[in-house]
Image 1 (cartoon, rainbow, N blue to C red):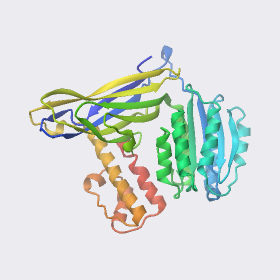
Image 2: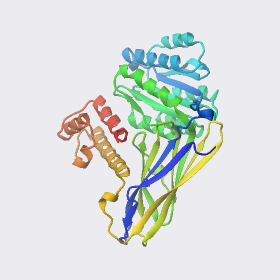
Image 3: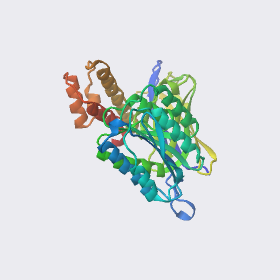
Image 4: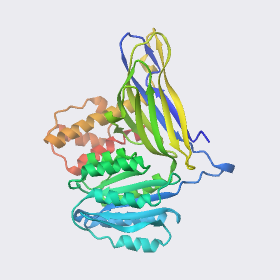
Length: 410
């Protein structure tokens, strides 16, 4: 049955003046799962879960971090359904299956196994990811939410490329990886990359050990809210239109990089789409000038899997009206332009952080159009950097975490 997902495309400027030169255009493509009731008006049933919790228990996790994470895992065990599948894998420089993939029936036995986790040695994240994938594949199905929650507090040793390959394999298998970084020393670029390559999300920052409980609860609620799976967005570009950039702006901001762009189309794996949590991609397009008239400059197509396993497709067009009359600036779409402003702020703040991490100083100056969309703590920390001050790893990650969530404030 069609209609499970609504696909819309809004232009930043639906009307533009013909100038004779190419113009920048913003297109916001949004996929929103229906919150429709099921048959007879009852709420739609959630999909069963197949979760692998893959946890770093290296020596640096000793103490409060590991205790908090174990409490968070036990919360998940307490709150999933009896028929949901859960596995728990721990890694340091070795890997061990603490809870083999199984329905959650004897909760006390599973929680006792989690309580037995002790801190270990070094960190080899690919070992945990690989065994987590093995546990997930035992029960993987188009009819369930197949998801890995991957937590670490530090840098993995010599196996980053293998982690990326496993993430690619997970994405091809319909398994999303949702990374969590606890503390100040984990590798943002790697964890973000692992999440996005698997069609999950970039890493979530657990700033303090006591925050782990809430973050794991959010992860569980996210998995339970999945309406459709394996969503892929393809935006086909028509003559005279080229793509410059694609940025995910909902549920968080993430620059998708050049790999999703081609001369004729933009392709983005969206993975799971949840009820009440739309996904949106902002496209920066260059559009050649056209004579006065109404033109379809692109067509967005979303393909996704229903709980039944059936593949559905929905489409919508990107329409621009060219006119010889001057177009007032206030005709722009405020939602699209707000997302464009915040995506630009995120990009520039990321450049500042990258420069600081690589050189220990900051030469980039942020103008008021960037800083005015930031919260007071982020502004204060960036001002400190630009005045030549130093920031801790925790503060750097706090800036990154907050700026990627700017669009949640619209």
